[in-house]
Image (cartoon, rainbow, N blue to C red; front, side, top):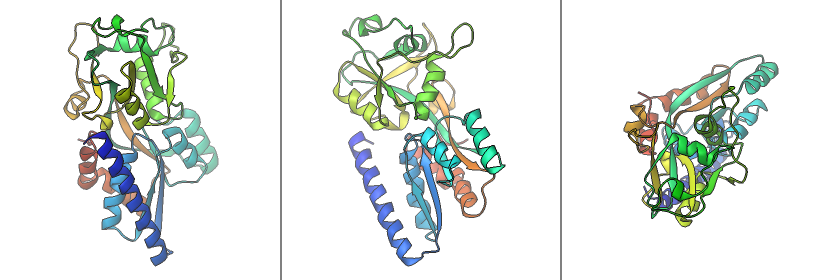
Length: 294
């Protein structure tokens, strides 16, 4: 689906869901509400789950937001939501806060998988990149700052875009691409990387700026933006971020998509998460260009 169409569809879907929710509140003040916040990457698939589940279960209101994985987990800790969507695993410090406040462990639910696509302008002749080159572009101390250092067919300074530090995609990309130093310390991002407010903003920049590079979930791939295939090392095959390449583990930047609850979910929340993990929920995962559970 084209990016512009996806954005329009997302807005329309959100508006429909909001109107439906408002209507339901008027009809039944005692309806069960499942509040969800978290991963921006998972917002579109979350809205898809919301719409279909509420059609089938009008007695349940599902409210979905996508302010970032860190924001969602913080809201879960604070008791503001029922479920936190996250595109990175929960941190030990966050687990400790939940245990201290509630006396329960957070429970992890795997809802699907995602490949992190590397975007550029569609007219950029650079079609392949290695993990080492990506690290040199993004990690502190990396020496690649110009496109000709990757491919002489493209010249000029690279405008490097990333995500805010509340984003699970930011956290995962830092771990997977920036990696660690020889002593095991995690490498930081370079200074000066543009902090974009969401996945769509990263893609929009790469659509309009011929010097840009950015990363986001593969659900944002469209024919309006360039996507660079990634190889594990020099001389190895470079793979596109596709369902098949993530499932086969050939694509080197892939991750799980999570939901977290405080303790084991019960009642309507358990039924909803079971549905998401089941055939109907996983069909929506595939529809949104993510990788369903196998």
